[in-house]
Image 1 (cartoon, rainbow, N blue to C red):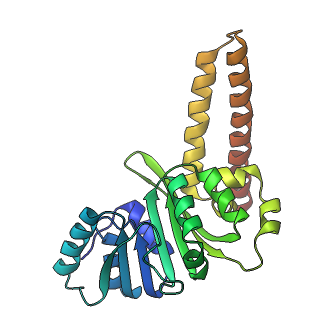
Image 2: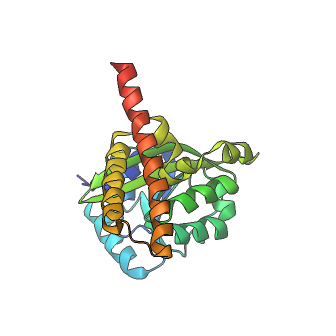
Amino acid sequence: MVQLSKRLQAVAGLAGEAEVVADVGTDHGYIPLYLVCFGKAKRAIAMDVNEGPLLRAREHIRQYHMEGRIETRLSDGLDALRPGEAQAIVVAGMGGALMMRILSEGERVARAAKRLVLQPQSELPAFRRFLALHGYRITDEEMVYEDGKFYSMMAAKWTQEGDREALQAMAEADYKYGPLLLKRNHPVLRLYLLRQKEQKQGILQKLGQNARQDVKVRRAQLEGELEEVEALLNAYKNQEEKVL
């Protein structure tokens, strides 16, 4: 059976069930194979901007005898997908800036999907802000720790009325760490916050009492960030005490 890494398992888990799922930047085609093999999708479209990954994906599709249910398409982002053709669209494992470009250029297709599953590798605060500004509501979030790295992923859906109210209601910490991860006191986010606290404390210790102006500015910035992280960790502690 198809085996996925912890990161890809979490991404696939957010896709839910769909008649057709499209995977943008499919690489080896593992996510479409997993979703079809386990009955989460009846059909899948594996897309990539380069022919090389599609050749690898086709090999795996043949290996699992899924040629009739999974097709491959050469596509720059969402270019080769029609609006409404896929109910779920997965865009994972890319930089946040590239994913914002893909969603902007393929806006008609992205808006028509019932669910977007998104896993940016960088620029998460800017990416979450982009979603809110462009009328996408985050409906689910997940976070995993694998091979020494933290990965955040989310499901989102375009809302016809836009998401201005949600944008105004979100705090800066929501953009940084994920509104639903914070709301659910996600255990992996707690681990990430503890790591952040340790790193910031270490940097502050190294900076010491250096009187240089640029160091003083950096120290003040770090102290503010540390205060925010500690406040979020205290929220976890308070929630645990309520449960007990």
